[in-house]
Image (cartoon, rainbow, N blue to C red):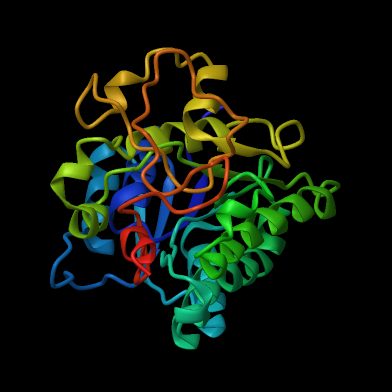
Amino acid sequence: MDLKNKTIFITGASRGIGLAMAVRFAADGANIVVAAKSEEPHKFLPGTIHDTVTAIEAAGGKGLAIKLDVRNEADINAAIASAVEHFGGIDILIHNAGAYWLQPTAEYATKRHDLVFDINERAYFLLAKAAYPHLCQSDNPHILGIAPPLDLNPIWFMNSSAYTVSKFAVSLYTLGWSKEWQLEGIAANTLWPRCGIYTPSAELHGGKELISEFRKPEIMADAAYEIVTSHSHKFTGNHCIDDSFLYERGYTELDHYSMIPGNALVEDYMVPQDISPPPGVKLTPNRLYDFSTGELLIGSKVGSINKSKLDKK
């Protein structure tokens, strides 16, 4: 099935992965609600909700820009109501907005902790709660969270517990909703990238050298498309890694997603070690952890902790 005339509510779609998803869905003639804070251009980052609507319409879809701070429950409820009033309903909810901050527990400011939980965990819960009665009216309703497969390897929680727990909370909600709303036919799944994904923010923080080991956001857009066009009664409760999922769906040529085809790719955080990459995918050596011991590698940096400095003590 395709997405023609389906209404898709996407948070954080003013740039990066959310923008790529919006354009991919629009090619089917979908209605896209672009819900994000970037109503005006950011000082350092390109892209606004209005720019995304322009791209959606150029791709063949219809767009609605809604300025939304996902930390505010009243604003979430109002945004969902506006989307329903404008397009007549909601078929798919995608929570793409996210807050990323890796730092050891002892250094983690309470304000930063609350930010990552408000945007990653709390917003997902509030969005699903607000969208639920409208999803019940859809003939193929989906909820999609951008979160990793559940993996209790302690290495993911060392030096970054707040961020990791906030993301695993998304995966846990998703698992619960896949059963809680099974009778309503609402599918709930998550999607996570195996490798770093190029976004303007990633380039700003990681630099151009690291970006050469990243993939384009279109790989996440294609994977999301395959998920939300699946039959909601048959595909639910899954935690998908983008390239492995696409490979299973027949996407055997993946190199074109690389920023520089042929380059080895840097693996993302929280990718379970037992989910092997598809044939032909080359990964660069891990830069953060020794997976046999969980220790930080020489030169790795998480927060203000640097392995080389620790070795000198």
